[in-house]
Length: 494
Ligand SMILES: [Zn+2]
Image (cartoon, helix red, strand yellow):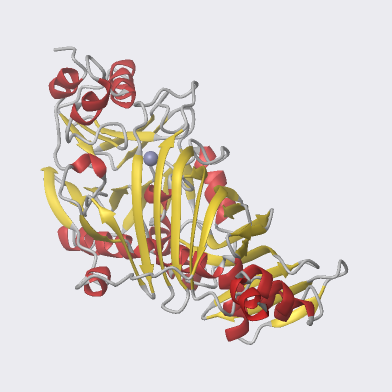
């Protein structure tokens, strides 16, 4: 009878007994209470909110919010591997007219130093076949999240010579280094991991503080786990999950796909397409720039992604337009995928042309430390120089060619965004308004009828407002240039 009783003891009950003979509120007692030493893998499910950090509608607004209808994280602590499956839909903001949000299904992986997603290369709208897509820029965040779970934190603390400092409320602050990353966690007097913070590198924010808060611990079928997890990144909300179920020690089989590591470390490619004399479309994957050959210098429009992308673009620009310095880089807006490469140009000596709101954001963000991944600007010690776009317009001219920078007014996409117009060449460079691919089809299939994308309507309104004579619309995302007649057709005006 007694043997049977011991046999059916749940992991949580056994852990409580094991924790009882250790001083409470310590790393040892928490390890026992949360059964962290015996939990080599975990799966948790929940619903809540997810936030698209880096896509804020302005640098002073919170990130776009998504309703998460299902979330499953599966973690193998021994292999340092994690999979997240999430179904979400952007929350409709009645003050910002966007295309109606569709449900997005994410399937994301990390294993050691490899990260990938299972999805369509370039996003769902491309219609390309679903495959394993390398996702190098998210390795650090996903790997961090493995150890920023209660059991993961305790296991990593035990394995990495953590130091413990008692807190005044009967708990302990536990600190350790995992590789170059410092983790700090708070264990409370109830042997619960209450909070964890660490830093990961971000091209815009530098050493970015990431915090996790765990509340409402309870016994989920034999394992003690929080019923709510709230994560932040760079001071912004990232994830807010209410946990519905937890499985201890599920079978996990996450394997890095063949060729993934090679694909992740493949050099960044940039190509140059001539748009007009002295005007080149520098394309790379889903993010492009434009290089303009002025009398004694070069102007580059947009510096997407990160330093690796910028170095590839700068090399292609210098090969295409030899022996001239890049004097200006025009920043379209502060979304991280369009701002992450800016600092490399500053390191090259370029002045950033942007709207004042974005300038203020960069000046603030770039004061933060960059110890995890010091870039060329950090190493150069240079001070960023800005030329603000005041009163909605700036002009860069070498006496032969004018480059007009216009504020794009009234788009729900971003409150501080510019487009670039070359009057002589009749070229309009725009971003995130019209990607020129799959014109209305992706939206028609769920909306039906005469739906048009409000971002494209706004682009057309701005062309009319500014009375621009446009022969070529050049997108900074998208496969091809287009004409205003094509834009009108897409808007069902022709
Ligand atoms: Zn954007």
